[in-house]
Structures are given as C-alpha cells and as structure tokens.
Image (cartoon, rainbow, N blue to C red):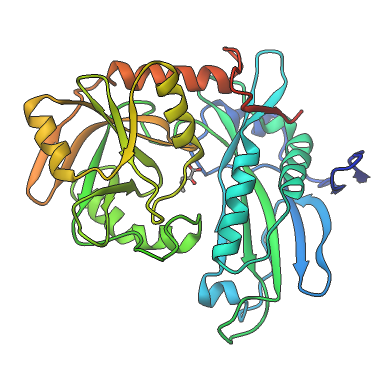
Length: 369
Ligand code: COI
C-alpha cells in the first residue's frame, strides 16, 4: 500500500506500509512496560543522499535490515552521526515532540563536524512526523513511556580511501520506551573514570557521533565491574574537571541553592535537556553557572555538606538522580534511595511540559499528530 503524506511546503514522504505489521495484541503487549531500546516499530523513515543528486527519495518503508556493502565507509572510518528525541502521548490522544528543531540543528552541526552532508531541518522534521504518523499506534500511553525516535546518518559509499563520503543514508527508527535505567526512576551510581577520556580538545566531543560512544564503552564496562551503572568522564587536558557521563550531562546542586553544570568546552555534548533544565532552574530562582567544575570541589562538597544533590540529564535519561559517586580512591553516597528536592522538582516540571500536564510557557512543544 503506497500513499504520500499531503504536505504543502514541507518535504513529502512516500509511505509504503508493510503488509505484515506486528499483530495488534503483540504490539499492545510490548507497549505495557517497554525496556529501553529493545522493541522497534513496523516502519522506518529514510532519505538518500548522493553528491550529484543531493537529498532525494524520501520514503517511509518497512522496518528491517539494511543492505550495506562490506566496503561502505561507515564500517571502516565510523563516519556516522545520530540523534535522540521522543514522541509523547498527551491525554487527548495527540502526540508531541520536545524542541525537535534543536535536535535538527544539532544534527546539522554533527554532520558538519563529521564531514557528512547537512540534512535540512525541514527534512529532519518531516521524516520524524511521517514516521510517527505511520506508526502512531506504537506511541505508548503509560506513565513515563514515550516513543523514542532515533534519527541517524551514515556514509554508505563503497570506497576504502580516507575522505568524506559521496553517498549517505539518513534514517529514523522508533522504539517505544520506559525509563532508561532498569529499575525505573531511582538514584543511579556513577564511576568516575580517571584512566580514560571520552573526547579531547578539537575532537568530536560536541558532535553526536557513534565514535564518541564507542570510546565510552570500555570505561562503561569498568563502571559495571565496579558496581556502578554509568561512567563519568573528566576532561582530557587536566583529568580534574567533570565533563559528562557516557550518555548524559551532569548537574551539581549546592546546599545554598546554586547549581553548576560543566561549561560547553567543545568536548561536551550540547544537550537539549541540559539547556532546558538550565532554563527551568533559572526560572525557578536558582543561580545556574556553566563553568569548569573540579571533581575535587564536588567530593569536598559531599563531605562538608555544601553539595546537596547531583543529577544527570538527557533525552533518554530525562532527569536522573545520582545516588553514589565512586572512583579509584573515593566512594561517596549522594542520595540515599531518594532524589533530592531540586532534582525532583525540575524533573516534574520538565515531564509535565513534555506530557502536556503543564502549560508550555517556553514554546518547546511541537505537535506531530
Ligand atoms: C539520548 O539521550 O537520546 C542519547 O542519545 C543517550 C544515549 C541513549 C545514547
């Protein structure tokens, strides 16, 4: 079955619906308590790029394996970028995304850094919309659930020379999700890696590219071995300043109500949730500074009580309290079982906007369906 989404000045996607969607009962069962990143919808959106023709062949097609030449550049030189955003079901059945243009703009910056073709914001938004329209039945309704959208682009050219690709594919896949961490919303434990770094000056740290996450996996494994759920990286130049976690930004709350988060040094991801949290905290009267944060300052603050809360944030993690901060020669409890009041309040404010329970005073929400 083929149709074309009626659009005016937005790019048009041909929709080729699968003849064998997941049966209704099976889909409904998988939406009840979806584990992050394990279930995928019936379709994916896709656009092809070649140097000669630019972006073309916009379509929604059956979700399934990709055909990739063994010499495709992405497999050898990791020329790949991705994004993460969510579609939220509101009480009236409508489906919304949160600041999707911010993801589209970051995707363009990541493409530039990885020498991939820049996808126009309109294409990014039209692809996301076309996929969510097609797979609307997959947007869950349960508390803390959403449809996680994963746009990505990779170098598909069959060529082993080291230079920017002349062919690329852009796709969006979708996955119904619950909380990122197994066990739901509760304080997580963090291992501060002092042996490995995620990114360095002039590198790709600010881009959302697979390579950054590949570099985080060995230290992430070390974190698991130390009984922690996430790894935290320090800066590559001095090995003293907090940077970010494996897949989320970090905030430190002081007992005097001030809040600090690592400044955007060029090696830190410019999180959409991070900037939203800064705005919400500022509007609530907190003084929020983006600055270098020495690990030693946080550890001393946990001992003398001047640091009261630490939390992580990101699209997948939303706002997640940090309960324990450990490293080679320290191990501190930050929160014992419960999130602190600042973490709880900003998480509630953010999710109330995302799920349509509170007014969208900032103009952050964008209706998809
Ligand atoms: C996100 O929060 O969307 C991320 O991309 C983090 C992680 C799941 C890779």
